[in-house]
Figure 1 (cartoon, rainbow, N blue to C red):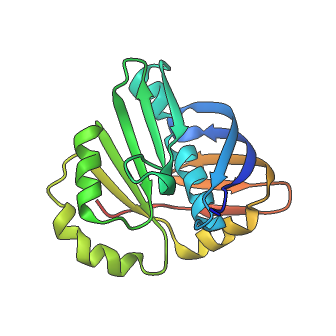
Figure 2 (tube, one colour):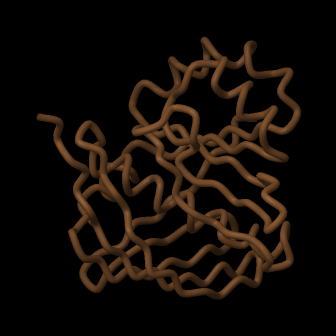
Length: 186
């Protein structure tokens, strides 16, 4: 019998000062049985860092949503589609192979990749040359220590506040907060 995903609920209050985006999100995150709390929280961070794109890229006429992620390799972890069905933004987390990333770049206007594990630096050294030609790809590194702290925020029901200022995301609940400063690799 296959294991089912674990459902997490998050209420996210976002103040993205860098992009003048102030929104509230009621989110349902399905954590795949093979997914860690850290990876799930990185997906939530990716949403917080890219929420402004709904207004910036689509003028508010679109949908920013979690994709099937690990459950379906042909879907992103997060995507932004306008109401014509055009994929404006495709977001992946982790360290994928180059071919799926290139395929995503052919399907979307922009692709963002957020790497976060302790092995991300080794992965990047092997992938940098393979991904260099992809003009609509951006690659970011999230500090491993911050991601470990993110995992500690994971609860089945979460009330979170996020602030983005000067490129740094501060994400927290009533008891703790984590500062995440993505490092742009590409």
